Amino acid sequence: MDIVIVPTAADVATHAADVVADRIAEKPGTVLGVATGSSPVGIYRELALRRAEGSLDLAHLTCFALDEYVGLPPQHPRSYAAYLGREVVRPFGLAPEQVRVPDASRADLGGAAEEYERAIAAAGGIDLQILGIGTNGHIGFNEPISSLSSRTRVAALSAQTRADNARFFDRPDDVPTHCLTQGLGTILEARQVLLVAQGERKAAAVAAAVEGPVAARCPASVLQFHPRTTLVLDEAAASGLTIGDGHSPVPDQGDGRGPDGSAPAS
Ligand code: GLP
Image (cartoon, rainbow, N blue to C red; front, side, top):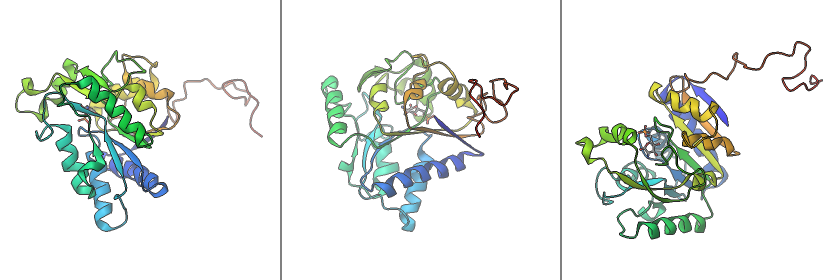
């Protein structure tokens, strides 16, 4: 994992937008995985700003949402389809068909999940997946004890996630209990992953994801297996990390040899 720590949430948005813009410069038809929630909003606004200024062309993107609430129709303002309409489709100047969202309004949710996996594959797979992280370490809506190889499926939201997301709804009971979410196995297939986190309330989850064991109790820890993952954190979100510059946990060998006993570089 590459860990980038920047001073503020605004810096997270700028740096992460640079990562996305670099990818699009290499491949204008990038297939972008778009997270929802508050964490990526700054990235989307920064990208939209660059588009408005004429320095970034987003016209050829194809986007796939990570998840959708079961029980909210797409036109409901708290659905992720509506969120992506506000934050991605319109500000990026895309046609609605360029931004796919799992169809959680279907009676046959299992069929909708399979169809979503097929749509991602038909698009050639996700080039760059943007992620936030839940306070309990979830990514997408893969809550603790999700299978580390799970695919897109119906899942239940944990009590903690429902409480965290109650701020977006009129009443806590209005928060849906279930979702359709890309699985951890689906997310791991993205060619590149960009996870952003801001604020101290994410510090424990970030530390568990980065420094903890790979374990279903912290779903984001599965990203330790991903070959090209970057975390962009503000200082508050990074405050739980203990392994970093000046905090090497490996004692010096005292003879110029590396921690693994290897000879010093010449
Ligand atoms: C949400 C989403 C996740 C998101 C996470 C954190 O419920 N399903 O994709 O990353 O929880 O949310 P936020 O960014 O609002 O803190």
